[in-house]
Length: 400
Image (cartoon, rainbow, N blue to C red; front, side):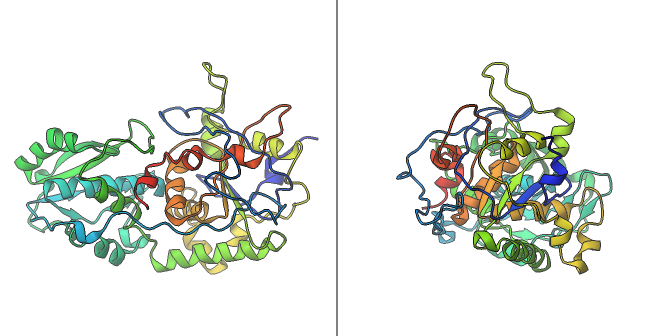
């Protein structure tokens, strides 16, 4: 039978299309892939078989899907009291760009740099993909939480002094997960000369894997990535109401739901091909996800899937669905994938990596990676994300 994804998949948001599905999985069947999405090197999108007595446990009482026993929220390994206050000698400015999955990393890099060079951090603005699409930080994130969380680490101000000219600001490129050596060699000399720098973070690779090398800035990076950003109350209320609506619609699965990240717009442009070297795939197209779900296991019998617009409170639609590429939509998408009972990344990349980080930080380790396996019957434990099964995400080094 031909499958039209738009009749199968719901929960559609613009940049990242995801499915919020409750009462679906009738048998445990996921598997692994290893691959790299174009332009994203070193992305963990592979999995390995682990025993059910391994890192995570599934409820033996529940036979209706991959619902694990609730995990405890881990405790942060860093302590704010361990940070000595640094005298401010200048300013670091930057912008948050490309969506919330990038914001997390951009914040971490900016805080690490500002701390190392002893600069005051200027509250960033938020810039969308279109010219002129700019927002204030407080339109999406909680300013009070952000500033308070960095007390004693770096000083935060809302803007540069009025007497500062834009000509005085030096632009410095910063690789994601910037090292202390790079700061000392490439950034600090510029800061000493200018005292005001603007950071432009770039991503030579999408690599969120835990490393064995440690540095004095690790605790700062952990705090910045996992302890500073929270949604401002209105946006957080919208996310909470949508999640509550999904749980109400998912009564047959005891109020639980799955979020599937499809990235349909990216796949339409680049396609989803196997690797020439290994024959494995870095992603799954919308059609493949739909067909995969039909074959032998799973999502049959669930036809009333909620569309995102039907879940979003009516009085919020004008604001949060204001444009085709709304920053609010991206934020809602990211945080709902972070809070779902199960997350299925159908494509490798920074969205998957940073959603995984937030889920690890909150104890929501149910992340399953799909694959098309002919003639194979695999248990759900064979398809845990390696970020979980191997504990190789950097978030694991931030929490105890």
